Image (cartoon, rainbow, N blue to C red):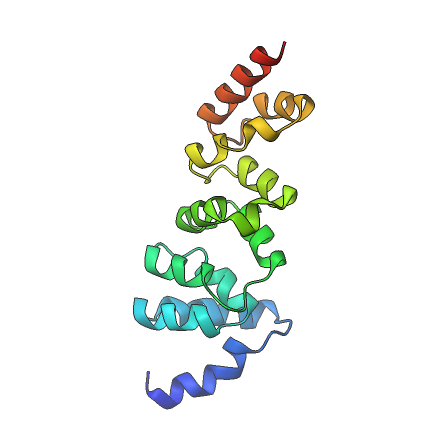
Length: 158
């Protein structure tokens, strides 16, 4: 695609506005054709929809760029933490961020997300209440290591 092609797609990629399903699919197809450097660039300037799509990209460089976007909001972080489609790199970055782990909703979403690396999820289990840990021990959606650690913490509390 030519440079002018990128500019024509500009507002659709950078303006925060609701988009329809057809436009979303077209946007996904367009993003799929981009090189990693262009995706990194787009992660910094793209709108919420574009960042959401890029948060699922397999490249760690793209994931880091999404997480470091100046446009990132608490709502975005909560959405990434809760989505099982989010890149593990972003989930790990959220778990390591002091700014975001002070938000209880973000921590709960991270722990319940099956893609959060188990060491990152386990770090937060000690802050969970007994009732929350009980629910986690039966949640097949979380990794076995996380369920196991929740059981161990519960057993130590009794």
